Image (cartoon, rainbow, N blue to C red; front, side, top):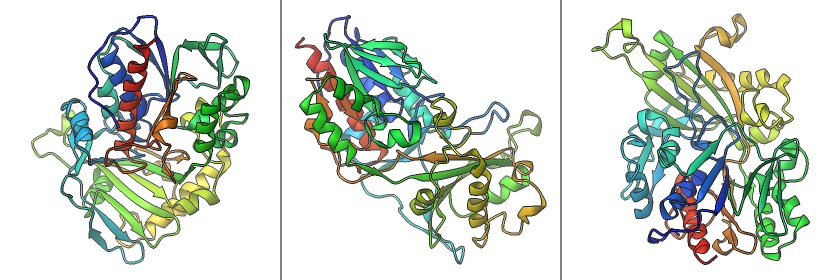
Amino acid sequence: MASSAAASTISSSVRVAIIGGGVSGSASARRLAQLAPSARITLYEMGRGLGGRASTRKTRSVPHIYINHGAPYADVRSKLGRSLISSLGPSGTAPFSGVRGFLDSKTGTFAPGDGEKEGVDYVTGAKGEMSQIASAMISGIPSIDTKFKTMIRGLSRSPSGEWQLLDKSEEVIGSADWLIVAGSGVAHLRWSKTFGGEPPLIAAEKARPDPKLREALDAIASHEASPVLAVFFSCSGPTARKWLSLDFDVADVNGSSILSRIMIQGKQKDKNSSQSDGGGDEWCSVVLHSTEEFALQNSGVYGSSSSATRIGDAASDASRENSLISDMMVAMNEIPGMPEINTKLQDESYSSRYDYGPVIHRWGNAFPKGDALAEDLAFLPSSRIAFCGDYVDTSNPARFGSFESALLSGTWAGEQVSQFCQKD
């Protein structure tokens, strides 16, 4: 999908707004800045940092821990994908060497699987933090401005074609000549269920109709997603040691109606480190992903610490959080061999046992399914808009809905906007 377009110069007056700081948004910003260093690029992200589903949760209370609660690694299959990842260097990526496989929820038996495949690279972020990949994409590029904790609640287009980005008070917080929509959030009807009101891009098209954009929005509306509830926590010392002694790092759970995956991230005790510097302490983070069915049965909960709730004012039922956390923790405990199998849940609160969490987060728009958005609908000069994300078609052998498909479509979007601006 992405081509080897030569570097070019476009007018410094060209302003590009990117909605979404996930992998595709960061990739589009990077490629556009490479091809058009004089363009003014602003990346708007609702969260506290970059990455989207490939983000990393951290906390000031326990600064040494990290939690990749959406994706612990990425599989990269295409030559172009490997080239893009390689260009980030060791400050952005690292090989993922964790053990992957399948865990039987009834017997606790783990079977290694999904091992190294020919022509597939498995990567994670530098220092094991997935968010480092997106961060490395735009680090040190002066033409890219980032606005975190910023939610776009409205979009409009002036008679001259300028895009205006609005906050929840309907105040203009940014203007642009081109709009790159990274992810389908502002364009999909599921926006209304989460945040209320009409999706911003749908409202903007109604105000200023464009048949081609309408066709793209209709195609996006047909896309479905597989929601996932994620519960995650961190621990240290003997408890961490138990988790780190298990046979796997990432296990897809078979036979459970509640859990679909268990992920373990952390550090074993380093015998060469002194206890005084903290380097010798074991710690780990554990992430539980629910099944799609469990997430669908328990809609309306997004997590009180999530950006959707804190920044987007999502109508989350906080009273149900502890109950759902308990359901998923109990399901974990019922798998033979899990470290908490003999713990009596009623004896003490979960929070007293862990350094951080457990916390719940809903990935409602992160795992697309269905047909990819066609290439001719992903770039629309008539409205000066481009779409990118893991739901957008690529001409490379990237897996639909994957990290790599987001990376490639974002890169392509940046190239298309740059090339078209040269004609203006």
